[in-house]
Image (tube, rainbow, N blue to C red; front, side, top):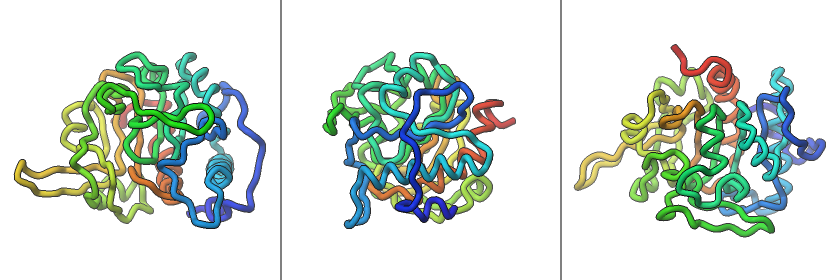
Amino acid sequence: MPASLLLLFIFSGPPHAPPDAGVDVYVYHDAAYFHTGYFDVPKRAEPLEFHRLMSLAICDELGRRGVPAKLLGARDWAKLCHEKRRCIVVDLGQSVPATVYHGQDDGSPLEEWLDAGGILCYAGDWVCHWYALEGGGREGQSAGQRGDDDVFDADLVKADFVGIRCNPTPEAKSVLPAFRGWASSRPFDADAVQRSCEWYEIYGLGERKGPEGTRRAADPLAFRVPQGRGYFFGCRFARSAHTDSAQMVLDFILKRGLGLLREGDPK
């Protein structure tokens, strides 16, 4: 892991700034829309400050690699979505804010941004199951409380896949070399992803046999959103401190994400 991610409590930097056309990557952090349900930090740490420092460390490390990156707040993320800005947004351990998705079955700013070519890098439990409200609260008023269906227009996450261990695939060796496997609380349904997405890469794959057949779970993974131009990368679908997720996101952005942003699906 880069040194900047190990020194979370040493590095500090400026607050988030409005979207800048010259920036390829934004890391979402907003104290006003902070729901910690997916963020499990060390006992002596304060979650909001831990998250701020980790987010700044990601920006710092990307900058060292020549990739401009800035922190992004909830309202500026909404502005970016409305502008349909083609860029990468990283969301680690926070529920997505209500400014970009608040339970819409169709047409949320987040969905429209992804359809237009945005790339979301996400780590946390069930994506879009909850959304964060201003003041630190959260709600889950999606259609049937299945926000992934709303945003991706496909049923890609299932309730009965909890706890399947996902191990590295051949694709992980080149894109996520630090990944060694983990038990996923809310992995994606690998077969549903393969059916629904024109392009995908599964970096962690696990199986569980049951009376209804074999369930194939994916965590981490990346895919082009169904019927859209944008992409989703997700990892560590669970409560966690997400420092390992930060490493996965860095590797994905540098080895795959920037290429997808500029060139589209790998040939």
